[in-house]
Image 1 (cartoon, rainbow, N blue to C red):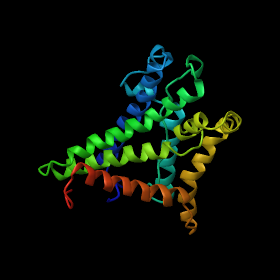
Image 2 (cartoon, rainbow, N blue to C red):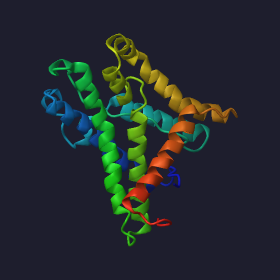
Image 3 (cartoon, rainbow, N blue to C red):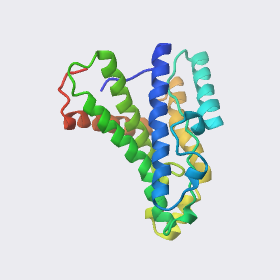
Image 4 (cartoon, rainbow, N blue to C red):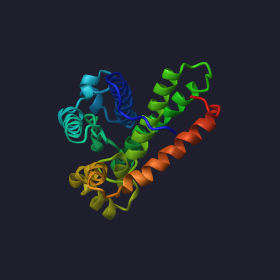
Length: 234
């Protein structure tokens, strides 16, 4: 699998549009899963919509990515990593008959949406007459969904994997694990940003990239083989 670096302005815009699509559908999956299980909070809040403005988080969608983009371009002249998030779809676990377990089902709906989108996009690549530019865009969409899906399965609250873990662990451990949510986003930021900063100091330490990167490559290549994309196409 070839990397998909940030390049020209047009490539950045395309990347943002593809990423926004994957993220918004991820959030909608949470909302509709909660609705199916008895919680209409997201619907009442007007969040079950494809309107991207309804999913913008002031800090996670605008401020943090903007700071990362500007900071990296001004210091190292290129973008080494990006990180951000959409406004989480509101869910009220008290509406569920079994709050912990059903919240885990709501959580897993997001990654499942991304994996489904990756499969559907991979099927498009079976068309050998697809122009190279379209092939690249579709493949980027596949990678983005795999990154979003697998990254969110890391079992750290407030990521989806953390909420899944809370639903599966015994009650005592679940309470303790859920209590990590207030610190979880800091730990996630360190995992994502720390290696890039260390790299500038000549230190090669990237536990997340060294595990998640090969996993994404393996799933990506296996998915293309599974749906019958010819080798060497693209």
